[in-house]
Length: 259
Image (tube, rainbow, N blue to C red; front, side, top):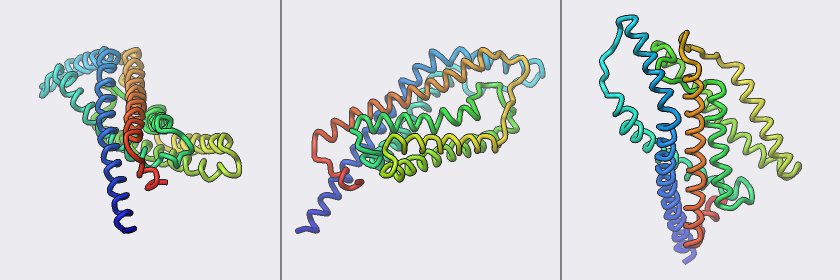
């Protein structure tokens, strides 16, 4: 009987995990659509200026290439589809991270845990990498270096995520002797020091063409970063609300499983 009870609890926990995963994917989908709308309004003008600059350069070199996919499709259905898929995938990963972090990050509620996790995710996955390797619109960056630039960016991104996880573990280890606030400050300082050292060690990339409109460059980068911030904010808020409804509807075996 005891074995049957334990097996039932595991099945309930798996069922809750499945519901959280679905909630995360739906929240990520909503966040992706909202982010798409923002970037269409705030970032599209900069993209159009960058494309016009690129076409002018190709015309000057007589190296214009045929457009395989129309610009309207790229900026409309294509962009929306890509952002929606990315948002849903991010939401699924967010749900898994939430299940692992809930009650392990500290005595935070469901909404607070989701909000903190979203803030840390944006910080480590977008803001810090963008300080070293900011987003680049069309015409910025040589075609022959795209592989190396992509490798550098993702290497820095993965290091940032690993450093953030390490900082979280350090905070938990230092909390008993130092207290919550001091432990958090020490962990944050450790993250900053590690990422600053990595940023100095990795090579800088600056392939912006001469005469490229600086206003368009900074408008694109600001819109890209703000759009990512908006996506993480919507994801954290929407998932937190969904998780609270799920946990209020039935008993919470997930808490016992991941405690």
